[in-house]
Image 1 (cartoon, rainbow, N blue to C red):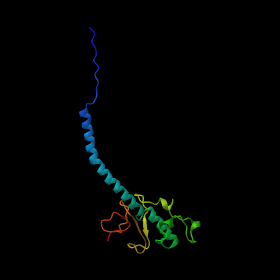
Image 2 (image 1 turned 45 degrees about the vertical axis):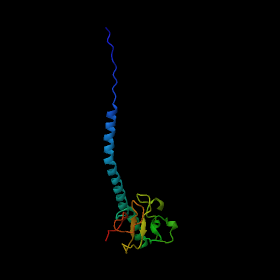
Image 3 (image 1 turned 90 degrees about the vertical axis):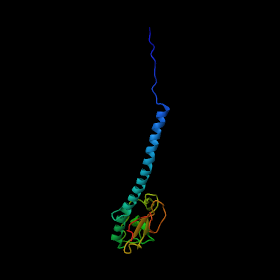
Image 4 (image 1 turned 120 degrees about the vertical axis):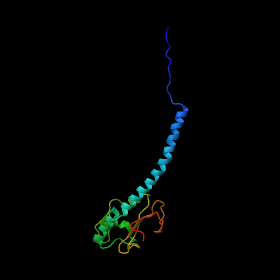
Length: 153
């Protein structure tokens, strides 16, 4: 007698597939909001590092002040850090004080940094800030999401 082998297929049942999909959906519901909050926090930290006392913009402004004897005024803005020596109308100018172009100097949300000198908060130097995640200049109001180089008073 010849026995016939029965081929048996192994596969997942519909219930098993739906159960795994449900578990993955629950995990995603917890993980995604947490990750989104981390991205905003990371962007805030990047902006703080850029405008902070030891950040690249502050270092460029310090170098400018060292050679020119003052910070660029508000009208000159941060663009003064990118001029070439040949473009400057002052013999003391020894720039550029930052690499790249002013068009590349954007906050993590893709907006230009705001600059004022003399500053309202730092009357003897400058105020430097990012408009933050909402991309609107909140003017330092309480509850503002702007990232600033000054502490709230």
